[in-house]
Structure formats: C-alpha cells, structure tokens
Length: 444
View 1 (cartoon, rainbow, N blue to C red):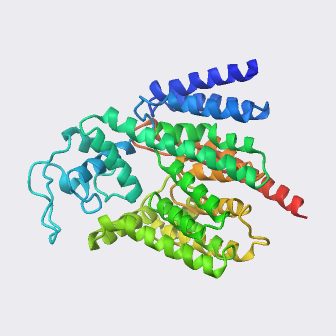
View 2 (view 1 turned 135 degrees about the vertical axis):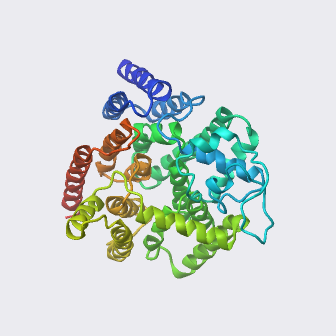
View 3 (view 1 turned 180 degrees about the horizontal axis):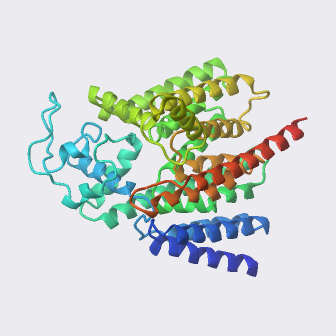
C-alpha cells in the first residue's frame, strides 16, 4: 500500500474514532470539521487510485471501529429497542403508541384494542429517551425482526442490543460489497467504483455508526437486480419484498420494471412480491396495523419537515398567500408529483436495460428527495450506492454537504439554519445540472 494511502487511512480512522466516541450531536462545529476531514481523505483515496482489495479491507476495518460505540448522532435506536422488547413480551409494536403503554403493558385479549393493564416490563428509563413516544411505529417487519432478535439476545443491555444490531447491518454491508462488485463487472464497469459507496463517510457514519437500515435496503435492491439480470423473476420479487419490508421506499422501482420484464416474467415477479409481502406482514396483520401505519404515514407527509428544498419554497409561497403553513396540502401534492414523475420516467426511457436500471432509479429517488418534506442525511445512502453505476457526481457531493443539516441540533429547540440549507441545495443543484449536461453531451 502506498504511504499516502496509509497516512490517509490512519487519519480517517482517527476522524471516525472521534466521531464515534467524542462528538456529541450538539457539537456541530466539531462534527462538521471531522466529517469534512473524512470526506477530503475519501476523495484523496479515490483520486489517487487505492486498489479494490485494499479499499475493501479498509472499508471493513473502519466500520469495525464503531462496534462498541453507542450512536452519538441519532437517538432512533431507543425506539428500535422499545419495539424489539415489545416483540419479546408478546406485544405487537404497530398496535400501540409508547405513551399508551408507558407504565402498564401486558398483552390485552386479541379481540380488544385496550391498553395493557399490568406492570410495564420495559426499562423505566427507556420511555423517557424516545423521540416519538406519541406516534405509532413506522418500522416495517424486517426491521422489527432485527429489533426483536437483538432485544432477545440482550434484553437487559443497551450496549449488547446496539452491538447485535450493528453486526446484522455489517453483514448486510459485506453482502452489498460482494453484489456491487459482481454487478459492476457484469455491466462492464470498473469494480473499483464500489469504493465510492463503501468508503463514503456519510455511509460509514449514518449506517454503521447511527444504525440506520438504508444499507440493508440497498443490499436487497442489489440482490433484486442481480437476480433479474440472471432471469430469476421469482427470486427477484422475493428480494424486493424484503426490501419493501425494510423501508417502503423501494416500491418506487416498480414502474421502472414494466418495460424491462416480459409479461410472463412480470407476472411471476409480481406474484412473488405479493406473496413475500403477505408472508412478512402476516404476523402483524390487523385492522389496527393498517390504520396505525396509515396515521403515521399521514403525519410524515403532513406534519414533518426537515432539510427540505423545493418544499420549503412551496411552503414559503403558501404562507405568503394564506398566512399559515400549507404542509397538509403541499406535502401530499409533492409526493403525488413524484409518482407522476416516476411514471413519466418509466415510459420515456430510450433503452431500458438492467444496466441502466440503477441510473433510472437514481433519477427517480433524486426527484423524490428534492420534493420531500423531510430529508435526513442517511436517506441519501441509496443515492450514493446507485451513483456508482453512473458518471453522476451530485450524489457524492450531496453526501458531503448533508452534514450541514445537523446545525439544527446545536440547541434543544432544533431550529434549522436556512442559510446552510440554501448553500447545501444550491451546490447540489449546480452539480446535478452539470451532470445532466455532461450526460446529454455523451448521449448526443
């Protein structure tokens, strides 16, 4: 290994070590500085040609630095643990809000939707750490299975729960690495492109460090693509079912498959997808499940807003015209516009192939996030993954600038600095425009 690469990786390890063990979320200056350093070293490693073998080993070792660390930049893992402990006590995490159970949960009779009536077996301090105790769980069944497994292995240890979760996600990242290299080779692309994703600081910090499941979603989408490219429609449908049962967002890929699959294969794929989703959701199925998830999704599109771009412009226009925040109308309208854009993209692709599917999905997800009301940094990990199959660089730039959104956590008021958000999106949109221009020039 070149001395330059050794030095860059040692500095990267130091930066990630400080991020994992010595950087609280309110310390925005330190957080931004360390991530800027990590991102600069990441670019240096890619530009100076670190080998695939060395890069893969470095990606694994840098992730292992996080193994004993508690997530410092996200408190979502407390809800993960709450849901997992509920599963292990026989409660359906979709059926009750935490505030309904605080202090009293045991399972009620199946025919009733009454809060449990005996003493709460969950740690009494856990409820106070939840960031959304008044909302129903929004984490689909695959997530719940992982939460339940980790909580079952370590019912009384927060540290053990986090370690178990992290090991599962690391196994997913190892599988992602193998699939990514295999697909890049199959599509005639340099396998070293896999390092754009695997060494990316946002991916490292948000997925391994903060325990978000976008990495597992990316792995399952790659598995779907790998199976589709080999003509295995049933297996691909099952893989997509697992992806959707981890995060609902992969459903957006469906319009892009309509012109890529022959009708017979499309029927087999759809049947496997439907059967897989039915099997995964069946253990939790109830009228309350549908109603409560519907309420949570409604709240997401109509109430939550963070680090948005075009939505904030629409919000400002709506407030100017009506005098109040129009999120209840603007949020769903922008989501509907994403659906229309997905259909338009699906039916206007010039040469839909399996090799071009990542690029099409990248564009569709980009449209979704540009119109979304909420864009947390970890949401962007799939964009980084899909960009490895393209010449586009805006997703990598966005992954470096997303840290600016953490300025909102400098105080407990969680007030966003709109100047930083403007800076983030102006740069991203400029790079996106340059990427599109370059792509059009090449196609001509």
